[in-house]
View 1 (cartoon, one colour):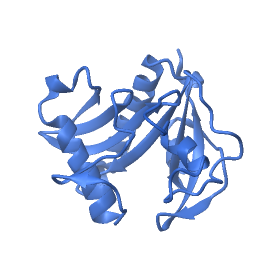
View 2: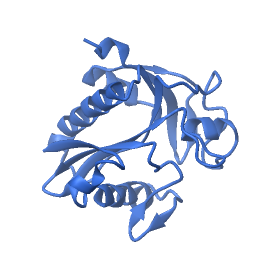
View 3: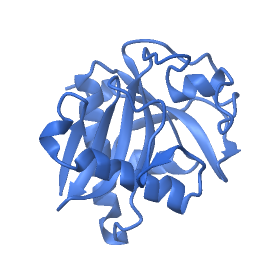
View 4: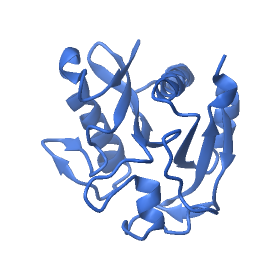
Length: 195
């Protein structure tokens, strides 16, 4: 099992890993979850898949097992910035605007974690190992990009997984029912991991 952080600068060195990750996202978010998202050639993408973002992929023998996208909260692309802020500003129909208790941050030390998934093809006995590998690389990549915290939307009960994997995760908004699941916006403090 390998873990790779992709960027527009390095994706050419990793063969089909980036399109395979977008195909795995398609399988998860459009195939399994039935979300209405942009798609082309069996790949899921959106307005936040820009050169400003990074993508962490857990993969084995060409198959993407899990992934996450990291986007700086300072990103801008037309009218869009990052998903959580744009939802709060009312730019996204699929995510409620009251997802945060405070104004969405715009700061170089805060990055957004989005499109987190573990493929349904990952056997149950391997899931925790895959999740730990994904979270470890997400934390390392975010820190290397200058982040001291992450902001993300996760299923309501995922903070328990966060504790099991050793990350400091706190709710940043109310539990909301959207995309047919109860989810919550959280902040992940990376400062404890700075040794």
